[in-house]
Length: 343
View 1 (cartoon, rainbow, N blue to C red):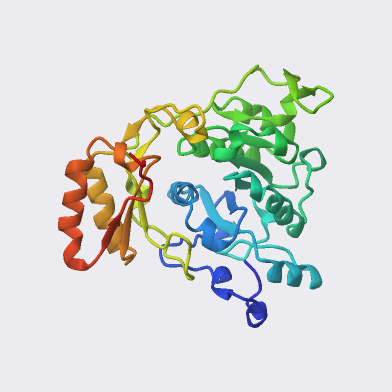
View 2: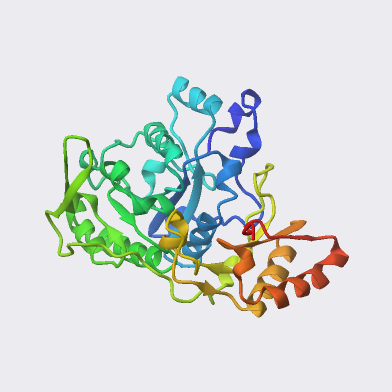
């Protein structure tokens, strides 16, 4: 992500090494469409984010797509890059972000939104979508924060609402066709708008009252008056989850994470995730066991975490948890359930 000559001057150089075990190295010139997947926070936080790794491996399984990662640098690297007039690059090939066809930025929580501006500034990419023509990468947003996109809508060309596993492949296909046809940016946005779950901010105009509250969002282009979130119907596909990237530095959740279920049945009105990730979809105990065995064998993690909005609500927990403990206790691998209700 930065010149290794700087490593003697930074606090945690392991954040910027790249080439982690199970990361994917593709030949840049042999792949037509290039994605940069960006988490707008430090490496140790972004490497703990399950969603970015899912999209990373899904894209790299496609022969026509290449996906590389980038995380927000700490202030020491940011200062060095600005002093030396250098740009932010990807971890895998050290390509400047401006060279990619699409820069996909996760919107995990609002407090990291200023980091998005830092990343764009360090990459010499204009902040506002209206100032970027087709010579710049398509800026794509997604993640939990995308369900309230207006605070950052002016910076993004497109925002994906909901689950990304299927949509990201469709977006990549649209970019590939547009790149081959050498069409305009407006034409690309029209094609992306036709994909379920994709919101094009430039196709809509919000009207505000004197207090800054949105009164109405009017469609000014495109054919959709509203955008519905994308929902992945089945979690059964697991091939892309069996080779997790092993970090070079200590990360926040330094373990193998397995998503056992997505969504929640409770519907608590104060819980954003419980509403936006419904309906409930679960993996079978057999799929979880396969993910655990392959993931541990391919990574060497010493802890396994069962991920869900509420792992205790997983309907097959009583048969899955003892089986995992029996399988891994002799190898001194612990099993964690990090999301449990008080009750």
